[in-house]
Image 1 (tube, one colour):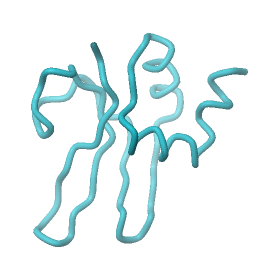
Image 2 (cartoon, helix red, strand yellow):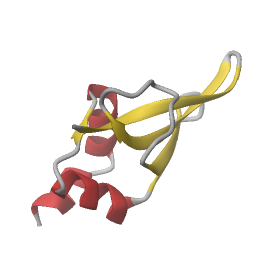
Image 3 (spheres, rainbow, N blue to C red):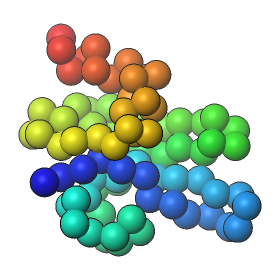
Image 4 (cartoon, helix red, strand yellow):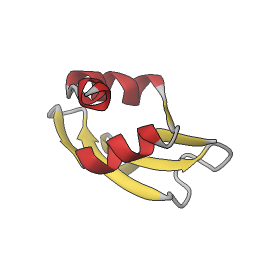
Length: 82
């Protein structure tokens, strides 16, 4: 099963995340299938590759709860229904 999850990177105490599509059995920071975006919780900056995320969701990828909330704020699910 493919999951959309956060991949941690950055320095200690200055963490940021990449939103990636990865196999559900792989490690958190393992090799992703595809990088789909970026999220920085310190500045609340988010950059998303919307067409790629919509494509992955249509293929059946399951987002984690945190990624789901980020996508909900960006209104990705409304684009998926349209």
